[in-house]
Amino acid sequence: MSSADKNLSAYDESTIPSAKELRFGIVVSNWNDAITHKLYEGCYDTLLKHEAQEDNIHTIQVPGTFELPAGARLLQQSKKLDAIVCIGCVIKGETSHNEYINMSVANALQNISIATGKPCIFGVLTPNDKQQAEDRAGGVHGNKGVEAAVTALRMAALTKEMKAPGKTIGF
Image (cartoon, rainbow, N blue to C red; front, side, top):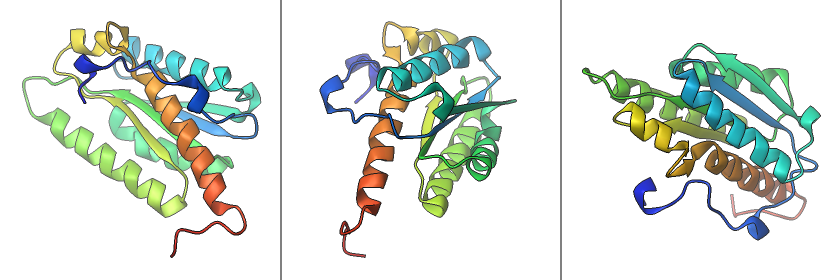
């Protein structure tokens, strides 16, 4: 579903597990910082809203979106985390650089998730222009940072639940 059909900040709060015992990493790209810092605020505030402890949220900044996977891996290696949210924004330009960056980052984050067994969330905006980015960073379509935090909360809780004794999915 496109964000034009949905507010990225809208979700059923009653379905979100408590983050009281969970530890999170947030990796934020400094490129397009007017956008990414708004996404970060939405993410951070949402984690706190669902009982994450400030001491259990670890944030680092990287130069650009392309560096998000390396930052996520470094953060995962240095902290014992339940999930990592990676926040970036690649605005389409006159070339197809955005396609290469977005696909590369998405694949790398997926590989990190699989290799570590810890959710690594793709909180990257891929808009066609600056206005679309602003609309998704607290504008008319909500804040993708909120959506990324909700995904991290759900996936971290699911990961812990599935690792509990007696819980398997058949593998």
